[in-house]
Image (tube, rainbow, N blue to C red):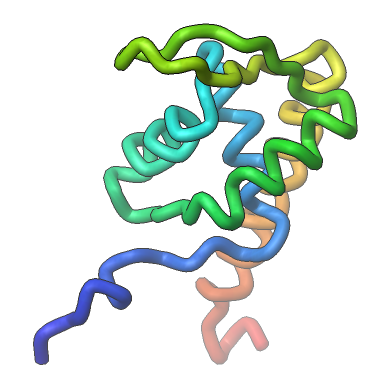
Length: 118
């Protein structure tokens, strides 16, 4: 059975977009569309972020003080807002990463459980 394009990509769990944005901008300043592309690239093209989700998240994170922005020029000589992590953003990224890894370990343990362990 052939998979359609929608089945090729994994949907994000609620709350993970902020974490992924923080990670993407922690690797270097990026304009909005660059954040989207960086996440797709790092996921091996498995995750697709839609602009309708990305830009409200960038606005929210900037409003929370975990990212900051400044205007610059993009690769194609257009005016673009570039985002970078703040000190508070780095702390949040570290905390959220620990929390995510802990949760992944817990879920992994549950999924690896056998009937004998139940």
